[in-house]
Length: 245
Image (cartoon, rainbow, N blue to C red):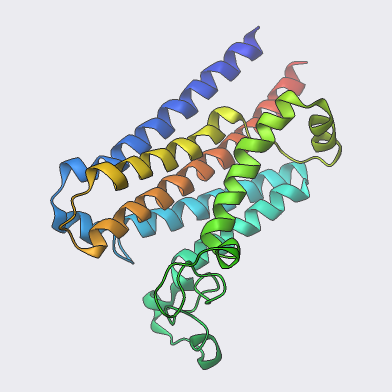
């Protein structure tokens, strides 16, 4: 009974923290002026740096969990989010001030030292038109959505409803995210679409609209950070329970 109560308290904590972060992040459109909104949504500014920070924290926590449990899936997640951190800030290109290699510059839509802006992976082509059809399936934006939808929402639902999925996950030691955390990825996307479609005025700059995308990405990174904290904390709880048993 005490273990069940402890889990409920922890999940309540996760729900409150994520809800508060999403609420305050999107509320900037109701609190600040257009100039401030545009500024904090630019590259190398508040939301981009927060996104990189959350990805980095997630990478570190997944790594610490791996070192304790020796689960290769946790190491893979750590590597994924470390790469995400580097990609988010162009591997420090604008901070350090190094130039993009010529061969990468030719195929990179933004001429940056990044992989996700290579034309085949970027959401827009060199003509600045948004990709559709099969080409869209290869973009990082689509693959990222597919990742959080499949791993953080569909897998938890499947493991709760299909015994074979749960057994297979346990057999290969695939850590399953709790649906109470995963569902916030969907909530984040819905909040983004609502504000984008019904609240933003039509007479603002492109950056004003781009900021909402940066907020969505930042909130998504924060949810992954909380998920990594959940796995890390769950590792500690398992050790405590073993000692008590």
